[in-house]
Length: 283
Image (cartoon, rainbow, N blue to C red; front, side):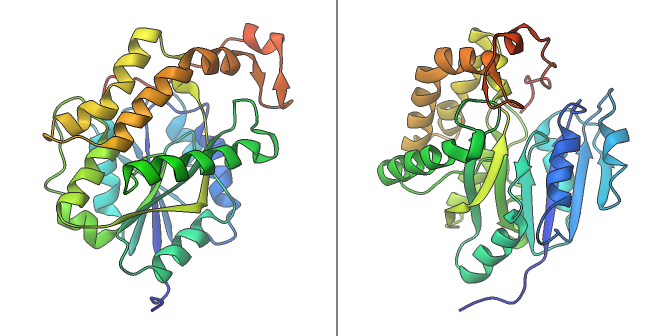
């Protein structure tokens, strides 16, 4: 049975994102159906993130002084006024029908509590004409077939506000872990269902590959560490960890060489100074 029209709030935690936030918000402005509200939660940025965000009349900017994406996320989620809460990152560029698709998916699937979608990297080869979207969908079918119910990814996810209200006081605020996986775990513990909708497409930056090898490995280990901290194991988390670690060297080189604007490998691109990514020490 199809539900009534659902409202949608999009929450974006930010910390020093002046390089990315403009294109993120441009993609929201280009939606075929606009969200009912867009909440940016600034987490102590010292660059022009807030200045850029305030140029968009559909954006509400909130401040969160406690450093860490979990605190910024909670601030935005708790302030959301809609039936559905969408969550993306500042480097996410939503497909033009993302908001419409989120509303349609949850309306058509009243038993589903949360959903994640297809993620493709716009600054890696095969990005042109979304050729890597086919690869992403194929890999997800394989991984979910082996590992079971999907996990939420903070770059491209949505959940019902009543589910968030149920777990808001339970999510972990201490320890080094993936906060989006943590949300997934707490939803699972209440018997809520998470689904994958291939039509919820988000384009992301692969900038984490710019981390030093030791930092990247430490970060990838959080796939399994997050579940271990809850006394659990998860096949999808294990597969994801091994998959990212195995392709890291090759993708790191590709990121350095791929020219997003030209859609091809460029030696000149490798010589350009790259913008610093946000502090990765807080999750």
